Picture (cartoon, one colour):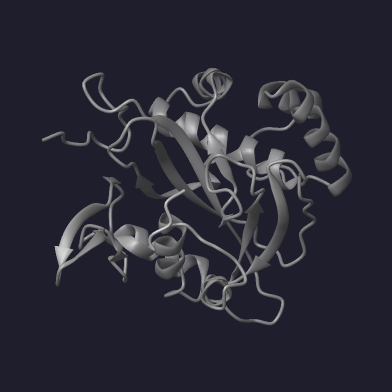
Length: 264
């Protein structure tokens, strides 16, 4: 049986041919004093992966992300470093939000940076043009999911706290059709009412995040559950097939009937 390597290592050549990817769960303070809000986006229905689903910002790791990671983060394992760069780049591309920069970024600068990124596709020229220095330590590895099948996304989830309640974002109107801020619990409630659709990984991570009332509590949860690659396994339960997660990975809901699972 194939065994996953550690989270900072690539899938070996004898494993499935997977696609490295990154997702960023972006927190901001609630304007009403409640649980922190998360940035969610609704993908266009035409998208091959998770079409019409509501997800966190993110996407695949590009070769240019690896090149920039090697230059800026030589002390960080390359798989994690490249995923951080990809998460920052994808967030700017999809939402117009420039995260993990050491100096404040104005909405006007972020908008101009996004235009430049969409034309070139690489984050490095954007950083050079604006003189920005990344603060990648502000992205904390939260989870790592990788199904064992060909062309699956080998996705590292990061969390990032904006530390503010007022943030300008704008949907890209190509891959995504809507952006909104809401708590993890409210996102789940919206899905329960049929207002949005969420895929299996998003649902499980929202359930986990909904347990906590602050970003610091989420960090404490990460400390209790060291990150490793996980994948769902199918089991028989009372004559029905269920997709389940490991019991010790920090998730309060471990699975659901396979018949109700949306994975892409």
